[in-house]
Image (cartoon, one colour):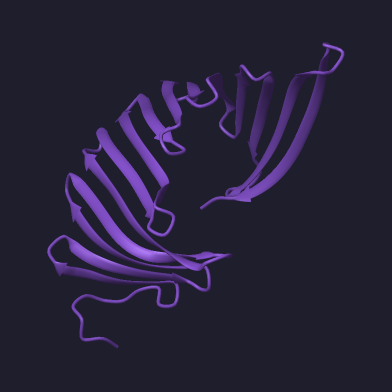
Length: 219
């Protein structure tokens, strides 16, 4: 199909040429008529870098040219990454994200900057007992432009080999709980509920309940 080195996969969705030189490859992605993109990718044991250019549909101007860059540096335990997209026509950044992650057997933590560096998120997940799937988690979110900070805390516990219970609470006035039940070998039933407290015009609290149920298949 092509005399270029490497092989093409996902033709029509994404065409990828692997290993132009060791660790270097290219990819072409087209989502007609919304966007198209060509990327140059470099993969290493401790780093991955992707740089690309393309266009994205604009209702008033037709198509806007874009350039993008993303990269990750680190190991399986500690890594630092960034994702940047610049709109050439608007002369503005569409996306600027950055993050630092730590992963260890009993602890996962991350610190990210999103929404063009306007939102800070710090989160951690600690496994207390792997045998009972007992774990606790917490997330802090702060918006620099709004000066608003919220905290969410949660926990989970397996009450049997086929039943898992999760619960969470945040400073926005929301309480949530989930029960996950294994029905068959690959079939799971999840029942989730949420209770949100809001202050009304009379300065009293209203509570808004929500409940849902889902079935899922897992390999």
